[in-house]
Length: 324
Image (cartoon, rainbow, N blue to C red; front, side, top):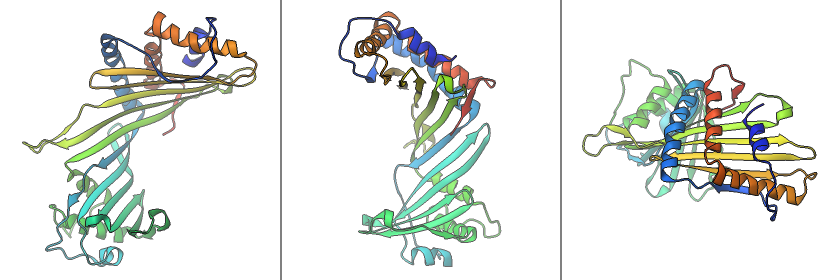
């Protein structure tokens, strides 16, 4: 069937023997022109693969913005959870499920912090459930439980947090969903790191083993110092294929990792034969043969394999399933 079978059959042949050590993240050497050609062929397919079946997006503010407590009258929910002392810094981490034009907030953490880190409080949303947690140093974070609160209390707290920022209070006559306020708080940060990724599996049956792939793209969203407009930095993209193929008395593992950024690209290779029916000499021949074949005789072999798999993800009728 699939590319993994082609990989193993294509690369198995006898050469000079040496110690049978698995290949671990071996970067194959390519010229600058070859790297640029890889980026040109593969990067658009990564974008298309993410768009074809949707992806999970994580957005993390990389700096804390200052909060102003003057003129703010906190709600009862805010006071009961966080006390009367205003916080000094705000950061937001969010996870979205994105498909086509639909964008849903899956989880978010709105973190408030006092100067010196003496107190950290978090408002966490998971779907339609909300939790708070306040940790005062030196108490360890993992020993302070989250407290479930009502949606109404969470909305009151979010509105108060919003009021501590340059946004001020929103209209009291128009209650707004929590995800809208969280998105506004995200937008206040002048620098956010964003990662988009999706996880796939070939649904091909146990005789071909377990074949999974990861596709992703990461970039930063930052404000231009002169104009204040938000812009994206050059994205970094990656593709991973992780496969386990059943052999006679043990599995064979194959890993292919492609990454790119700023027009450059690299491919790393991993392989591990754990079948005891093959001798050390045979396994060693496989490892050495794989590297020599791809590095010296057919430098486009793995590039073509990455392209074929990305096209399978994009094709709506292929046997690929998205897992996450």
